[in-house]
Image (cartoon, rainbow, N blue to C red; front, side, top):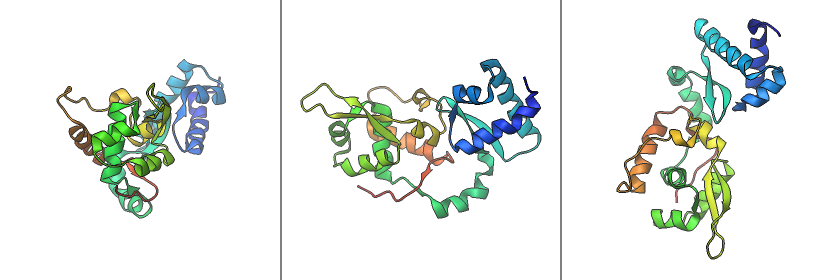
Length: 200
C-alpha cells in the first residue's frame, strides 16, 4: 500500500474532480483501499490542510466527503458569490422547510400549510434537485409525495436529515419552523443557488 503522503494527491484530485460529495465506497474503490485505510487518509489529509493553513477543508456531508472552503474565509468570496448566485426567495425557503420537516408530503398538504398555490415553487425546487418525488400517497388520485435530496444535505452542510435543528413539539407551527431554518440558512455559506427564484 502507498504511504499516506503519496495518496494525498490522488485523494485531492478525486474530491476536486467530483465537484460535490463523493461516497466513501467510491473513494475506496478508486484508491483501492479499505475503510480503515480511508479513515487514516482522511485524517492525514485534514491535518495536512490544517498544518499548512490551507483555505480548504474536508467536510463529511450526505454520507460522503467533499472539499470545501473554510467558513471563516467566506467574507473573501462572498462578493464573488453574489455576482453569480441568487439565494432562494422567502417563499421558496418556506416551501423547502415545510418539505424538510414534514416529508414525505404532498403538494396539497404543502398548500394547506402555506395557504397559496405552490406548484411553480415545487417545480423550481425539483429542477434544482433540492427536493424530489419519493413515492405516491395511498389516497384518492395517488398524489405525489415530496422529500429532500442529497443536494439539499450538501447545500445545508449536513450529513443526514436528522441533523436539522431540534424544534418544540406539535404546538410549534410550520411558520416557526421556517423561521428557524431561515436563521440557520443565513449562517451557512452554502445556501446560495444558481438561477433566479421567483416569489409565489
